[in-house]
Amino acid sequence: MEPTNAEPTNPGLEGAPATPAAGARRVSYWHTALLVVVLLVLSLGNSKSGHGIHSGHAHLRIYLVTIAYEWLLTGYVWWGVRRSGGTLRQLVGGRWDDFGDFLLDVALAGGVWFTALMAIAMAAVAMGMEHGGSLDETRRQIGFLAPDSALEIVVWIALSATAGFCEELIFRGYLQRQFTHLLRSRWFALPVVSILFGLGHGYEGPPRMVLIALLGFAFGMMSIARKSLRPAMMAHTLQDTISGLLLRALR
Image (cartoon, rainbow, N blue to C red):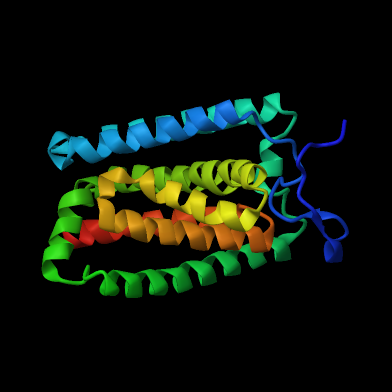
């Protein structure tokens, strides 16, 4: 059976799909709708909980619970993709052909991450987030997540790697593909998924949610250009790891 709603291929790349897994059959939209609802409900719950609930020395519990639910959501995506006849490898965008391919992804991840960070810093200045009060608010919103001990730093890095893999697979892989089918354009799907990515981080507060959406847009552009999620997964892991260590230093 031919895949339904497949995107056109790039004629210069011998039939390579225009986006990761673009040629795979779409998953049922009820599956996508349920995932989006769960993401938004979890985000809303986190935004209302406040950092007071997380006071004390509960870092490891928070990290481990977050790792568990990220993998549960990834398992749900895998289940839907498998039911439609696809694979997670298709969502990721294949595998590295050689070491040079790996180095290219590393360079692309670092370059796009640094460029996006500079753009986001300018956006933060434009939004007035460089003021002392805004910095204090940021520490209040997400400072409780900063690791303290050596063990917490190790688990934080594991959490960052989990987020890098799982969230990119969910947003830039699965949701990007689903909304591309729904909207019949990857370029219409890209901002929609980026906004959902920002909305999925309710605990960080509205201003930072806007910045996260911008970062998600940069990761989405990189994934489309590379036809793979691998560079975005690397950049995402790097971003979260450094953010946690900076929060620790600023406390």
